[in-house]
Image (cartoon, rainbow, N blue to C red; front, top):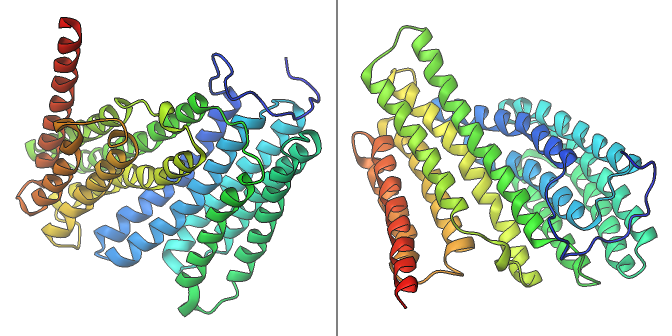
Length: 386
């Protein structure tokens, strides 16, 4: 039963059986539209051979999506009261996400970030309200909560002011604001660490990873379905669909095979892990766009060369492997398994130059999964024999 009002005191970071709530799941689902829109626009930009502008626009838009999600996730881990004011404030954030998603096409097509900025600021100001509420109730971490509220507010003023900059200063202004956003949590947490729950945070990140991987499956399925409806059924298209499914499944396997909650022992490591997932999420979602480009190229409707079509899949997969290695494998693994990830990333980039890069990527990832599984089996056998 929903509580009308509950004092927003900090939750314990060692709560037993802490899991994602239905409200958090709904919040995540609201981001599906934004992620799908950004990935779709990346696909169209790549297929039209607008690689530079497409990738830049995607990375900028995805930052707004990811940062809005990240801030709510860590706040909720420390202060989720699940009362009526909390739920209604979260509803405002969901509304901001939908406004942001509506602005994605204009951002890509006309470099007009006005609507995205409005949606983003709505999300962030809702977070200010949450932090002010936490500051009022949690005396021990009041200075930290106030820093969050002040820092977020100041940065939002900067985002709005950035809209007034001339076009030649657009990217520079955006990067300055990104640095400012990333600096706010670091500055705030120095006044007193919030009580986020490591297992809960890792679960939340895992759920969002599932969302972006699901977007890749959906994008590839849509492209292949459209091709089949147009009468382009062929063995090559079917094999491409199978290879794409294998790639996404292998990415899921490799990400979730390495528990990460024990890596969040210090604030510095937590910041590195949490911030590093920008590239995990962005690359995973971009794989779907790459698979769509591969379908377009096979159907001769893409306007970019074979090398560009192949790199649309190989580059995000390689980025995914390297970042997962840095964040979750390298800190805890040794031996051949440790270096298999960067070696696989190099191979993935190399197969860009082969006649069937998507199929070759699938083979490389299957080999990497097999190596990981065999390594775990060998380790388990050695332990059981001692």
